[in-house]
Length: 269
Image (tube, rainbow, N blue to C red; front, side, top):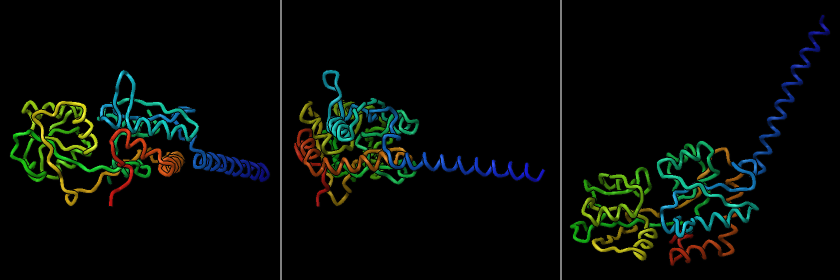
């Protein structure tokens, strides 16, 4: 009887130990091999809007842009193929949380709120904001947007900046719609990243619009990073290594010059 009890006890202990060893083994494997963090084998799946030129946009039915090309180069360095999932802004981050994709590349900046739930790569771009208003607007400074009707995407970094200065925020699906609302006199202005505004102004009519410079002393440059799930530590680490390689070999700067006409991949002194 005592032998049977001893045998059962040893059996339970060995089972528990074996399970623990198996879990530890899986955990270590996940921590060491970034491919274990991928949603789809052989692919780096990226979530983005595809409506924020020149970061990502559609032209001739194809996704193009700075972040699109950068994602392809990152994936190639990792021996993977970049696969893009175009998603609206209001469900973009939620899609990452539900594992629809491995990461989000959508001119994302790090915020304390986002860091509580997600992790971020090292920054790959930096940009300052500017204010766009009606050409006949009496506003002369971003401080003047207090109480004004400013159009920006709900929950976007642009909206956060505008709200910081006391603006009333009206949501728009994309930048182009925001500019059109201002031209039609249905909004007072919009806050936007300078590179995005410059690209729009180069390729579209800006009649009825004017840009109001925002002094650097009133803002911190927005550092753009890739967003990952917290449990994708190995993937995040590998992508950081690849980003550093692409920075050193000049690829990132080359892409920036192609789409922005200037180097936004390094923080200015």
